[in-house]
Length: 313
Image (cartoon, rainbow, N blue to C red; front, side, top):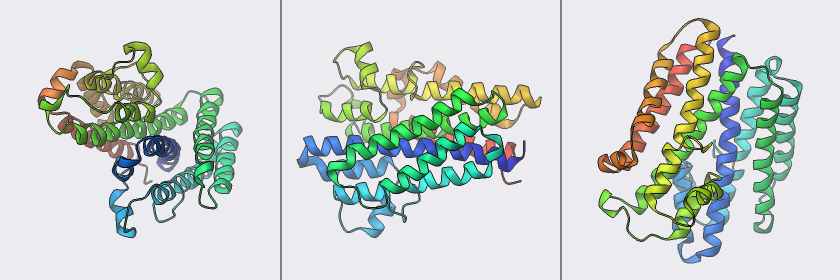
């Protein structure tokens, strides 16, 4: 496969995953803002930081308000990672790799773009926000479903999956780092009473509230939530799950191409770190430090895959 094609596939699905992650962040931020209006500004600032959009937002805004943050994250063209830009970039990459996609995948991406271009053509009213966010998540799921249901399991599929899980792991780690580290700035604070709404926001942001309750009941111990989102391989948005899938898809590429590359070794190292560590060890050494190291390694892996498979050629 040409490097540009591989890169187009990986970035197509990174952008699709990013659009859904942003929609989930906005949804949970809106819910907290409605239930805790006294904390609304701080909560929206936290959402911006999780989306890595705080500095860019503040460079063009004098204050943080819910309406402005929602508009910035969903449709402001000056924000390179807003949902509308993500979907347009996903479609551009899909056009680049059109011959490698099934008709169903291409149509799902194109319909996603057409639908959201119309929905986000104007500022979204508060009363319409739940519906629009639902459409964003639904359209992303349609593309993912078309991929699973129609694509041949070969290198095209593997690069698409790598894009999905590299982006998803990044989003989960950033959410935990911003929310958890701000709330518990030192290991000494672990176990102290915290606002349950904040922890529910973390779980809701990764569509894991029901799954967590099924395993842990109604308890909201910070250590249990952190363990669940980082180390539980059963949760589709946990770091461990994402890296198990990344490792699998890189091994399939190794088998298909008959060559082992540096990205395979780096992915294996990250997988083993997640498999052999415990939440107690993470807290002892520092959750923020662990997550920052993970984010750096995740970024390094994405860059190494680009070099190994020559995305620029």
